[in-house]
Image 1 (cartoon, rainbow, N blue to C red):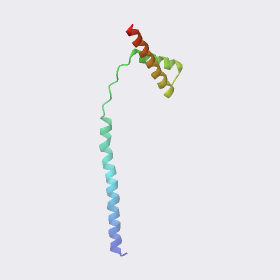
Image 2: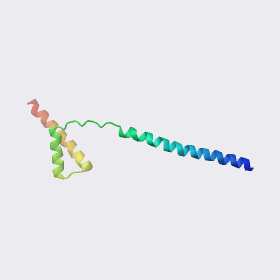
Image 3: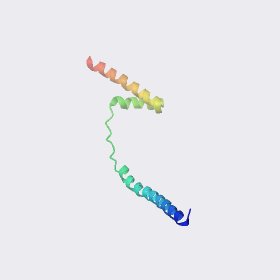
Image 4: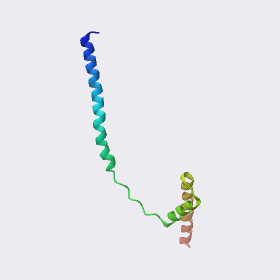
Length: 88
């Protein structure tokens, strides 16, 4: 390879590397404000049954999957009991 072809190759490589570096720094600040501007979801009011099931789970010291399963079963039972009481 001649000296001029090496110089052209080196210049081309520098341009590629520089454009990649500039592209990475230019997109990072633009993405940051978009994530902070996301509105929070409004929380739904909790039913008395849900609050009671949460209290029971707290008393039992349940966490994670066990708590989720317990609360799910508790809410199903509460709705079934509430539906039976209303129909009488």
